[in-house]
Image 1 (cartoon, rainbow, N blue to C red):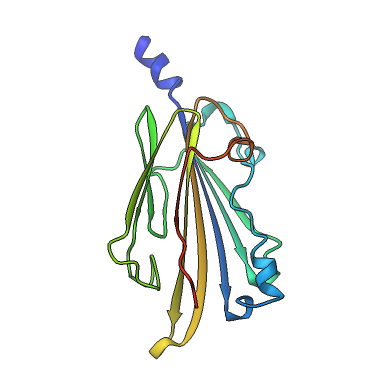
Image 2: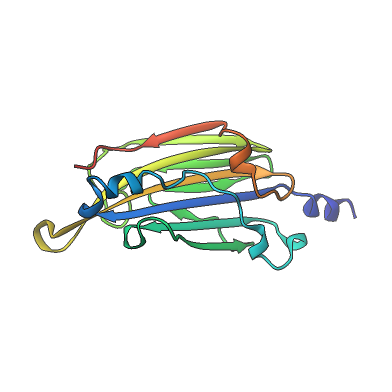
Length: 185
């Protein structure tokens, strides 16, 4: 019986990933000003899940795009994903005591993009009821010999919490942050 109580009262990893995608049309004003209004942390929409009682982990993903002037993001919330999400160059791990965000730059077109950041790596740890934030961006070519450039910014917020609350990432600053933001000419 004791083991069952420990499992049921285990802290909940909550991962929020905010994507912002644009083209050269939003590199300069006025679209750049709209792009810069995309938030780096958001409330967790707990009303999107059926039963909060059965939640052992949450993955909240939000996509902002220049097609709608960064105003109407696509939102998804997954309760109890089979694996913890990874996005861009950031991977999430957790133990029963802490959440770990690991940034490892990958130069591939599907992960880190340009400019090259070499062997850049960083690890952030957060204890119970705290969270960490990793910000990264990249420039990606979609075509032969450079073709059209696409740009992205990804913000990963990750924490380990003892209960569900919509405002974990809003109410307090992160315990640790890491920025792999480059000048995207």
